[in-house]
Length: 204
Image (cartoon, rainbow, N blue to C red):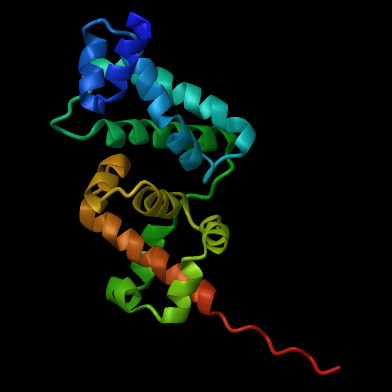
């Protein structure tokens, strides 16, 4: 194994913040490892909002922005994962706004018309049948496509990337309690879609 290969193996074991420190010291390979580390997860995240053909452009823009701003990254404010997903989310949002292909959430209107307390749903007491359906990955993916941008972001980051509501709040630039409220509203929407009774079949 060459010296270069040994160095790359060692850097693969470094965490994100250590790789950033190495990159800032002049080891360009460190940023390449970060790109490799997050390409799949950022691609899966982007797929929730844009077509597959657009994902390479989203990833390229995301990593270029990260590269240009890496010296501004502050691990005391957020983890690199949270930081890079924030950039990806903003890149996706910019793309959708330019294409005018997304209807942004009408949450404010909903809150004016309906008291928030009337819409709360506790995922801990969802009926077993509902939980069973929501655990069906294919079925859940289909449902998520019907949710607003923020709702999809929260579900994807929380259940796919295992981010906390506090971390998601940093990605969305919203208070943690707001993220929790969005999550509950999204659960309510999904529960309604799951529990809609089917029309009885007509007798032949």
